[in-house]
Length: 310
Image (cartoon, rainbow, N blue to C red; front, side, top):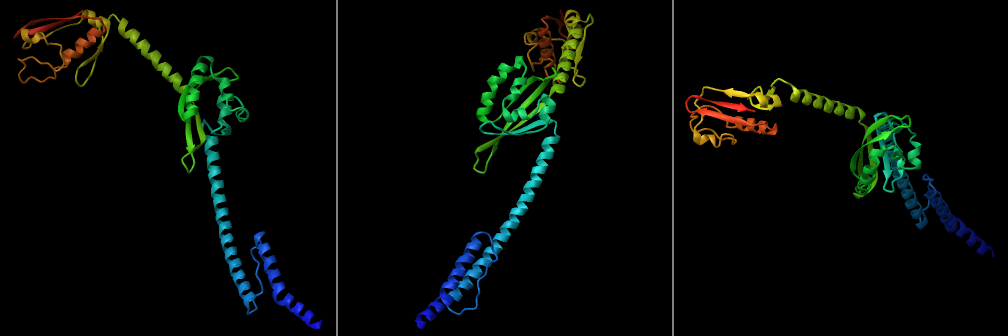
């Protein structure tokens, strides 16, 4: 009996207990406790196993320490990037938004409330809430264009909106696809710009142009617009067409050349080395035709030419 007790005690001390320690240390490492080491004072197979376990535990501790440091560094970098993004998105005077491919709004900048006059929270509840403000005259066109843009995740629209206070604003709305590492579209970025001032400026330019045209055409004086460098006539008003007459005392135009007088780049056979391009009369004829005028030619070879515009 005593022998059996001694054998049992020796097996517990020399085999079972070291294996139990190894099992418990392995469980603690699995739970994230990396600083687990086993006694290494044995010179048998269990001692070799304990030494190998300690080496593995130390290597794992170094590996996970390095991983933890990298995670912390990347977390800081991500936080800095998010802060830069937030500062940019919240300080530009455009509405910046991000949505997923299911058309759920993930982010919209505070400028939405400033331009649309509505809380950005309405977009998180309903991604199409912005459509409620579109001007009735533009609504049908936008509803036609929008599905095509959504299908390709990219496009541009211009439309008017009516704010809750009744003010109308012009919007330039653009969409861009954002792709993941595999090249698949997984986000759509939107940029809506208030272009009201530009539209007002364009309208003012059109009004000024129309006013100039009215004064230009209805003036009782003959007005010509010429290129200062080439003296080519660029335009003239109706009164010029009615009154214009030019006479010179040059070399004149031959009867043979008169047939082709107003063809571009065509010059008289008697011009010799006199400079010219053959475009002046062609352009003048074109301008006169555009104003429903007529041009006649009186010529005498060697004594000059007279052009009359009516």
